[in-house]
Image (cartoon, rainbow, N blue to C red; front, side, top):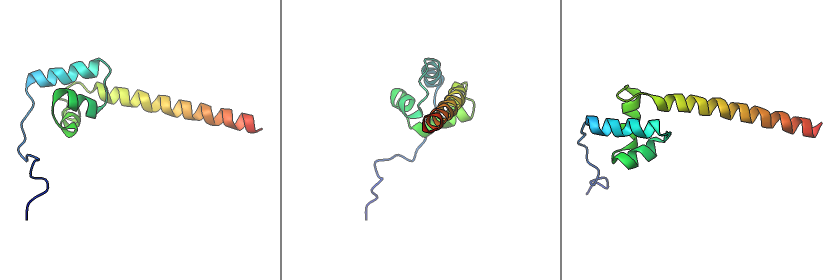
Length: 88
């Protein structure tokens, strides 16, 4: 029986400083999606997430995620208040 995941390598490589710099530049440019950064850098999105979580790159993504969450809550609250005022 063959393994259906045989094309996925189980061998991991650490990112070099050039790739970490590339990740940082993408974060600085406003790209916050681990998937988008991973595609650009050429690695798995879990690698990007781990690099950010471990502090290998400045966690600008965490700041952006927090800002996005706050804005989302504000927009949802405003929408709910508007909907209630329209109903009454």
